[in-house]
Length: 156
Ligand SMILES: O=P(O)(O)OC[C@H]1O[C@H](OP(=O)(O)OP(=O)(O)O)[C@H](O)[C@@H]1O
Ligand SMILES: Nc1nc2[nH]cnc2c(=O)[nH]1
Ligand SMILES: [Mg+2]
Image 1 (cartoon, helix red, strand yellow):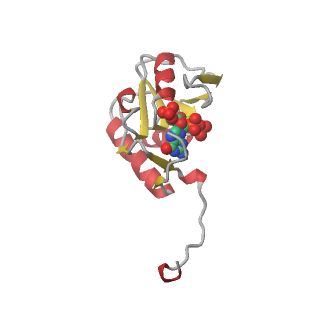
Image 2: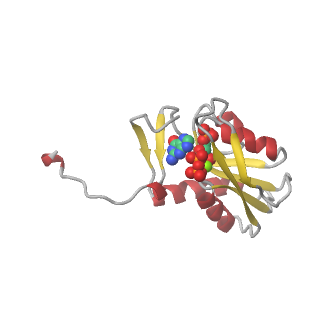
């Protein structure tokens, strides 16, 4: 999905925090002891999950995707130092086409892969997520937005 769509789903900081806490509730009591955040989008939910689940070992994997490549290839710029394990949570903000999730699942086959938002194409690749978003909708995340003046309806 590219930003060329005009269907938008705007997410405030509060809404993102609330949805990520809902994800934490779903994971509570499941004995995960470490988190790998998928940078950059996964860094914010990873911090919230680490706090809520009292997980103190937090690592990152830094990736970049190349959209001009029709295979949707993913390059690992920096790997995590934590080994794959069934007690490891891999955290990203969202899954869209599923290309990022597919590559990460191959990289961490035993770990649990979670996101806050999921679109239909990527959904089968995620172990847990909170909110369904339509495939043709662009999710505008709070760190990509700023407050702005809005004209009164009568003046529009
Ligand atoms: O399911 P996919 O189609 O692979 O898309 C999902 C990925 O896209 C976004 O990251 P992006 O590559 O935009 O980079 P960023 O996290 O550094 O902002 C998002 O954070 C996911 O990691
Ligand atoms: N912010 C944002 N990044 C994405 N990367 C892939 N899909 C999306 C999306 O819907 N929103
Ligand atoms: Mg990302």
